[in-house]
Length: 311
Image 1 (spheres, rainbow, N blue to C red):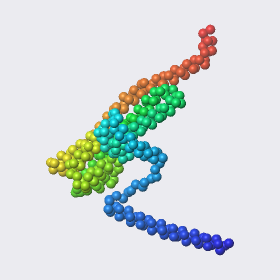
Image 2 (image 1 turned 135 degrees about the vertical axis):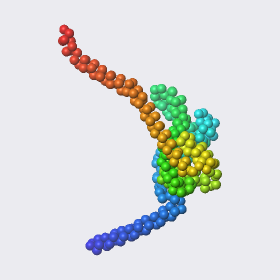
Image 3 (image 1 turned 90 degrees about the vertical axis):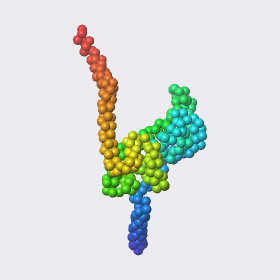
Image 4 (image 1 turned 180 degrees about the vertical axis):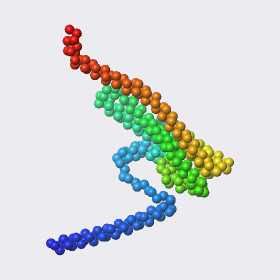
């Protein structure tokens, strides 16, 4: 029995030593591979694909159904003409790899789902369920339109928020003597979100041989943010007139910071009347009703005392 225990411990130690050796080899080879990919692509951080959740699988299934109803959706394009949808998708960064045809089909799929929900409530006898036969399909139809418009607005606001820091970093890099293209390639590695997506696509278009002015036009087409459009137009004008790009970036960053401060002040000024309205029409009446209710309850509880006083 003792020999068996000793043999088992020896084998465990042997296998553990083999495991440590192989793990060390794995980490070394992995680091070599990361360094090689970094030398080729310039990126050192990579996103690991996570397992799909049930909600993600359901969304992908709905998207596949949208392809089936794409032709019908393009016919019934109320409040969502194809050119408008294309513009929304560009400004939203094409979330979920949506195309115009798939988006039009998703509207019809959700409208049909809304009709099924309305019929279900109607058959169960819910109150006002007859109105749901119209309201639920309308909600399903307009829900994708509202969602894509909101995504586009959020993306443009994020672009506006990140732009001053991006311009400052690029300006410092340009003043150090780095070219614009190389500066953009290096700086976007330290940013996330729409600012990285837009300028990465801009660099890819230049690598594919697209003329610089045409690439600038595509940037303007994909983004309707006023500050971003002002920057791109200044770059186009500087390219035509020969103005130093570093000066342009520096001036634009200072201008955008000033605009952002003014927007913050404007929002703060608009918040004060809203707070006053809420206080006047919600908080004050509620407090008065609570105080009055307590007074009425006290009077009702002490009604016998008042009767004795007035006798």
